[in-house]
Length: 201
Image (cartoon, rainbow, N blue to C red; front, side):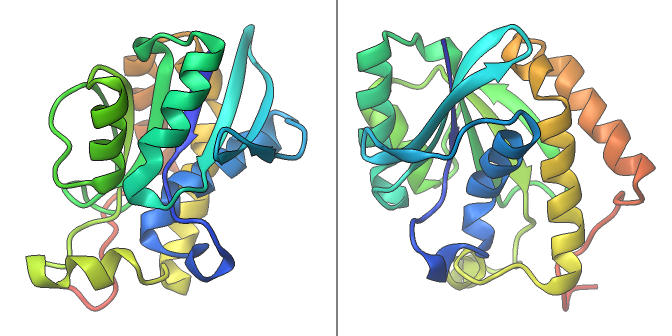
């Protein structure tokens, strides 16, 4: 059993926020792989299905970002899911928009969702880092991540989420490097190579 976790904040008012791209990725995976409708469980919205040959729980914690670890640890304990079988999808300020990188463990780069999961579970889970870019001033970060993606940005956001969903079986098999490379090539082919934050040169 694998646990795929998308990070975000619950509620309609946050649905289009940059901070919620993890939720968007999980929703795209659920659609592409015909998962049943998500239901409240483990302080989260969860649905269970199959990706490739693997059973996977898709989770969107409903605890707000800085308490995400509560939901993740509850589900992992119940299903006895090992830390290396947890994959967390989250927004990444330190990557350019539309870029994706995967790593296991490492620092949390000030991300409150990751910090909470690490505090509850330990650090050696897998992270799918979804680049949203940086506003250029750390004082602007809070408002930047809690603002919605612009209309032009949504083009690459939807393309990235669709690519993730299409190749999620590689993630489920643990073929992280192949998954990352496949997404990179697909996004380049779709014309999303050097995306910029609106208003930045």
